[in-house]
Structure formats: C-alpha cells, structure tokens
Amino acid sequence: MKPTYLALFCWLLRQTATAQSPDLILTHGKIFTSDTSQLYVEALAIRAGRIVATGNTAAIEKLATRTTRRVDLSGMLVVPGFNDAHNHLPDGMKATRLDLAGMDPAWPVLLDSLQRLVKRVPEGQWIDGTIGLSIANSPDATRFVLDRIAPRHPVRLLSWWGHVGLFNSMGMHETGISDTQPDPRGGFYERMPDGKTLTGKAYEKNAYWPHTNYAGRVALRDDSVLVQQLRGMTRALLKAGVTSYQNMCTGATAEDYSRLWKQAGLPFRLRLIRWGDVNTDGSLSIPSKALPATTPDLPLLTVSGTKWLLEGTPLEGGAEQVDAYPNRPNWYGRLNYTLADIDAMCREAIAREDQLHFHIGGSKSVGKLLDLMAGMNVDWKALRPRFEHGDEIDYAPEYLEKAKRMGVIIVQNPTHFAPMDGFPVGAPLTHGMAMKTLLNQSIPLAIGSDGPFNPYLNIMFATTHPRRPAEAISREQAVIAYTRTAAYAEFAERDKGTLTVGKVADLAVLSQNIFTVPVPRLLQTESVLTLVNGVVVYDAGLLGIK
Image (cartoon, rainbow, N blue to C red):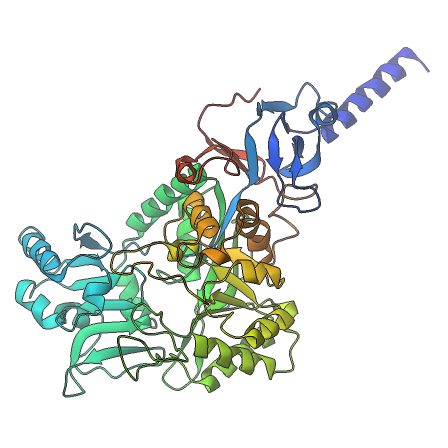
C-alpha cells in the first residue's frame, strides 16, 4: 500500500472512530438506572443525545477519544430525569393576587386583605386568591359579602386543590355566569334557599370558568405573563432534576400551550393532555383534538391523551363514596357525569386509540367505572387507561383484580398524604391512597405531584405515608415510579425512564444520595447537573465538564 493510501486509510479509520465515539461520558459515579435487572452502574456514555454504553469506569473510558467530554462524578448519585406524571401549568391570568398566609386563610383575614387591596387596584381589574377548606366549606363565604367590599373589581377565589371557586357578582358576570345560571354538565353551582340564585360558589369545571368559554378565558390571560411563568417554572424544575412534565390542560388548551411553549423556547419535555368536556346536548368537546402528537419544530413536546374530571374530592365532599360523609349525613358525593356520558368518553377514545385519563377516587365511583370498563369488549391493556389519584382502588379486592386485568395505571400524588391546614392526618387509614398494595399486585404505579413539584418532597411522603404508613414504599420504588413507570404511563418507555442503552440521556446528578440521607434531609436535595437529550440544561458549576 502506497504511503498516500496508507495515510488516507488511517485518516478514514480515525474519522470512523470519532463518529462513533461518545460525545460525553460520566464516570466514577453511583448511577441509579431505574432498571430492576441492574439498578446501578458506575459509568455511562452518551452519543447524539442517547446512552450508548453503561458499565464500569474502565470500560466506559476505553470508548472515549480526545473529542469526548468527560464528567468525573466522584461518587455522586445520578438518577433518570424525574417525570412528573400529573400536574397543571399556570394560566397566566391577568389579576392582582391577594397576599394570604398559609393554605387555609380565615374568612375575616381574607376580607381584611381584600379591603386593603381594592384601595390600590384600579377598578375593573381582576383580583385573585387561593382559599382552603374553611372558606370553601363555609356557608358564610358568598359573593354578597365580597360584593360589599369589592363591588367594582371582579374577584375569583380558587381553592388550592382546584375543585371549589368563589366569585363575586362582577367576577361571575365577567365570565358569563348569570345570577341564576343553570348547572352545566360536569359542574354545578351552590344556590340560595330559593334554589335559583347563585351564592357565588362554583364546583368542578365551574371553579375555573365555564370550560367551553374559550374566548372569555383568552381575554383573561396575559400571554407574556404566562411565557414568563413557564420560563421561571422550567428553571426551577430543571434545578430539581425534573426533565419531563405531563400537563393536564386546565389553564389553557393544548394548542395555546404549544404556541406559548414554542415562544418560550424551553429545553424541557412537555406532554400536553387534552381536557375533555360534555356539551349541553350531550356531545363531547375535546379542545385541540386535531393537533398532531408531535411536530418537527417542537421535538420535546407531545400532545396525547384526554382527561375527564369525573368527580370532586373528599375535601369538599365531591367524591362519590359508599358511605356517607361523616360531617354530612345522607350525603355520599356524586359523579359529574352520567354513566352514559362516561360510556361515550370511553368509546370515543377507543375509536381514536387515545389514552383515557380519569380523575376519579371515590369508593363508589371507582367501582362504577371499573364495572363499566369491564363490560366493554376492549383490550384495555393496549390503551393503558389511567386513574388520576384513584385513591379508593383498594376499597374492595375485586377493584384491584379488575384494575390489574385491564392494565389500569394509577397515578398517585404523595403530597396529598401530607398534613394540611384544615385537613389533619388523623388516625391511619384502613384503605385508600394505596401504594405498596399496588406494587404487590403488579398494578402500574406512577407518581405525579399535582401541586408542589419538588420530587424530593413527593419521595419523602411516598416513603413515610403519614396517612397510611403501612402503604409506604421504598425510596428506590418511589424513584422508579417517578421515572420508569411515569414514562410507561405516557407510552414513552422505549425512549426514556431508565438510564440504559438506547434511551435518551435525560438525567440528573444529585447534590446528595437520596437513598441514604436521613428523611428530613431529602428536602435539601437539588440537581447539580441536569441533562436533556444529552445537553446540559442546568449546571450549578460544581462539576467540571472537561
């Protein structure tokens, strides 16, 4: 072989080796894969955004070339990027917020704060605030009291769990609600003793606004504010090591969020789950139904699934229970829709091969839904239906058996287990809010925060379970539910959820080992380096990337 040919041959070999060499390697670490066949490895290699090798440091270092970047983890813990399986993005509402302390402000305290605020907010501008159980469930909290203080400012007070809202008269009229508005499907209003006049309290979808009043909601939103909210929230999520977020579209439609997400330019995986509604004539309304699942200009965003708000929660007495509520004799809660409506929801999703997300948790309503689904000639496992919360799935053994047979995924929210203002822990539960039982029954369990998106807070409550300690799970199980199973819950397990060969390189290097630190110290955890698709999207500067 002539020298010139030899040189060319050697050059081609080098180019081939460079093309196949890792872009980045992480070595000398404790890498938790979320893959139960091999939970830990010491090092991994990334090329073109995906993991191409895992193993010990010596083996991975052999793959590197002079162009490969390196991170020496020095024993630090790495986990797959957390995937918040159930949460709600902000709505960018144009409003001045009431400054209220705690989750359960007293009615007199709120009124005093409102009285001070109306003096400095221009007339006609919205005032918004967050209320807790004491106001949401108080017969004294009505629009007529708010009207005396804020007659010329529209006011909305929304409960922190989202199922109860209180409007003043101007707020009602601004959102198209008349003094004697009929109850729509999917929501209802509290009324005065005459049975007609609204008190200002709105429940379920009405707690936000009439969900089909799209033009009205757009008019109340400031897109520039929402873009800034999304950017700020994303920075906080990436600092926490959360790289995927499954959003229930309450604050805006999937189409709106897609447009604003593109405008914000966020380096983050977002799944938009449509929010379904039922029209007055019984037909189904599914905003953004025609949107494609993915688009080339938004590679980190997907649109899939439809959420249905089937009932309320035990907090306001909305979940349908077998037994009457202790503080409300002869009241058992109620479904927001008829079984015929729910049957239509199921059949529509089956026809589209769309994933169903049911907000449901009551001991009676869960049984009704499982019976309805079991009576349909459908391969439910292929569709992976999700029960968001699904608190009473273990109320009866047959519930668990049917859920397992149909492949129902339970998305649980451990922050709901926490002591809350106005909702103390009390005696340990004998059923409900199950976690360990689901894993023992091989029922898929994913974790979503549905509130504070700090994964370490959710892991703390999943592994201590203040309301039902016997259902606590291990920290390793909690992380798997937050990563691998959360990916399965959105049909994304082939791409993400584990740190294994072929998966996207979404990961977080943590400031401490969350599997060994004392429980109180979990909340001190942060990510010091977060990657999405192998790209650094958050860097605390503690690890040098060579």
